[in-house]
Figure 1 (cartoon, rainbow, N blue to C red):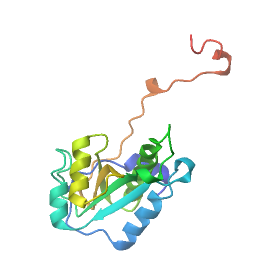
Figure 2: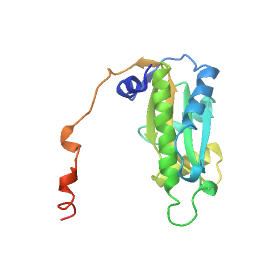
Figure 3: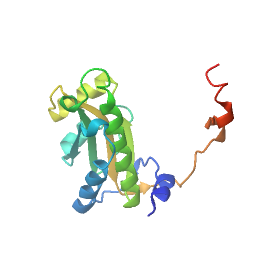
Length: 178
């Protein structure tokens, strides 16, 4: 599948079959995740694949949006020990978000369904995931991703809106900022 096709076909899937995700696909997803850009190449991400049903049941209760019954839950988190010191130390959010998007697109290209559930900056959700998985304070759960084969996959679509594209032409530079 071409990258553009995966972008247009990627949709949030909220119903999954019981079929397990093959190990080769999981490896591919992790390779794609870690191919994403990272500020200063610090790669602050950590990935937690949760196959354990008891832990999955607890994670489904973290937010009202995390209740889907997928065969795999993936937590993408930032490791604050691997961030830019001082101002700019929040770039881990962008780095990990790029990894999440790579996972979602790779999942689509592999015929898998996925749904991104945001955790950070919601302190309660972050704390619940830390407690459930026994994570240290320097690990900040950013996203919970449900993964599996979609039981019902929404059709591809575009959300392009030309009114949200703002173009500054070369001869408009003197007017910018006024």
